[in-house]
Length: 95
Image (cartoon, one colour):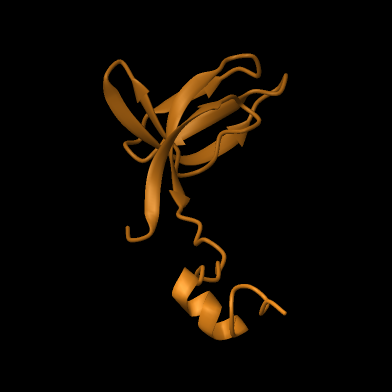
């Protein structure tokens, strides 16, 4: 998608999100849905139809899409010539 990048994040049962892509045994799986399990775990349902029980203490790496943040508008610096014309002169006149 335009304006998005993939970043690697460490996730556990409380931080995993729908759409995260986990690589298990060299095969990528995209999280489609989740079900809460007793003890704080989650059953991850993948778009392929497979599922994985993720315990609360298990940490796995996932690829997550994040939108690019647009930088705030930063005013352009004036060149030295533009500054002198904007101010009038660079130093006061000697007496």
